[in-house]
Image 1 (cartoon, one colour):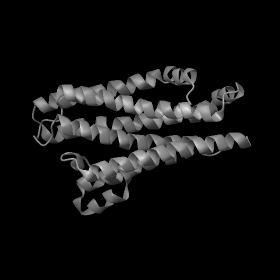
Image 2 (cartoon, helix red, strand yellow):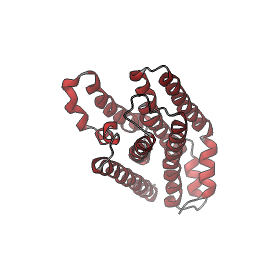
Image 3 (tube, helix red, strand yellow):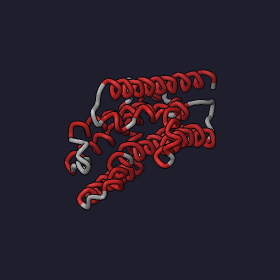
Length: 241
């Protein structure tokens, strides 16, 4: 139940944001290809399986979830759409599809470019098939993050910017920082398991098996649940406004 004009409008409104993130994504993979040719293993890892797979798509989802709901509330665009007679459910479903689809297309673009550039073949542990599976797992991770950010953007009668910055942006970044901490302090490796990012450990995808599948499925289902909760609270608050 989508509204195509609203979907097109969201793409037009956010086109500059999308271009910026596509440029960042392409740049990270091009840098990875150059570093791969220079045989700089540790630096290359950061550029091919961290920035384009986790960080850049995550930041884009955070920005788009805020722009499509929170800012449209603030500038009264959402009120105008509701006044046109389009149902709240159709409006928010369309915006949810926009946020999720944007993350999916960015990762699909990244996966294709990374495959062409062979950014993964520096250590000999990865091949094109496992690289594709890694990116499919990343899509599930980003679906979860997008769903969470969308839910927080929809939450409350008129969600404030500090509220969204704290829970929609701050909490995922805090969890990711905790997850990364064990790379620098191995004694704290247990901390990685208290964050959602433990369900996307890259080593699971070197030889993908049941654990990688179940972890990715969990992330995807949880993301869809958060999108559904966002729709529920948005429609509920509309009924009380």
